[in-house]
Image (cartoon, rainbow, N blue to C red):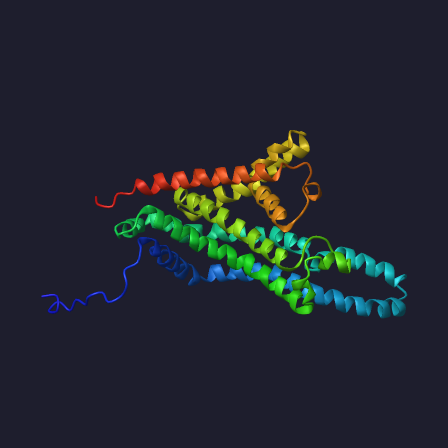
Length: 320
């Protein structure tokens, strides 16, 4: 009878249900990558990468041309002008400061992009009852949650870690000692912090931190506010309103520095700078909490989001 119905027996190897995490993420990314809005936002995010990438070459060109231009136009002391230019563009030397500024500025476009695509990746599954289709399969709710988090994490990695690795490769190809010598910046006097493999691991760690936290937070927020506009309002409030409130309490009213822990993005930046090797006393804005305090707050927010997602997906009726 199966042959008459044209059924074909499964010839492959049966895997654990945890393998379903990747197909869930792949389908979500396929839906997202077909939207022109995403690629428009991604292209805007690459503009900052291009500025960092070509800024070093523009600085070298300006250095070679400044002396001649100053003499022809009688602009004054070329060395003083060059010193000011180097001070303004010193963050392009590939040091820990380069990646800190890149991640900090890139964070703005990442937050905006996630706000726009959150309802598409997660919210629509609750709005149009697609979650029932996933949970009707031989998988549980954690497979679905991890699959969606993986999809968001890949988007964050595409916008942060991947361009940062491009910047790292640029400086490594310019000078192989940058890749091999941990004390490269101390030896050359061109910057501070470690270089080589420790810096590469720090760049990967910073990007992983952003990916893990933002993916869990977005999936939880999108499952709560399923429509695009409510999601954008709540998502932006989590980062911009809380930052404004923290600055008013700490900088304006001179409350304890721990009130700055309300600023989730500042907590991410604080831990990211710790990954890059910044000393605690050299981190701005001051005053600021300890590294471990920011880590505890972020871990607590992730735990609350996962508990909510567990309860939210458990409430979905598979069979009505």
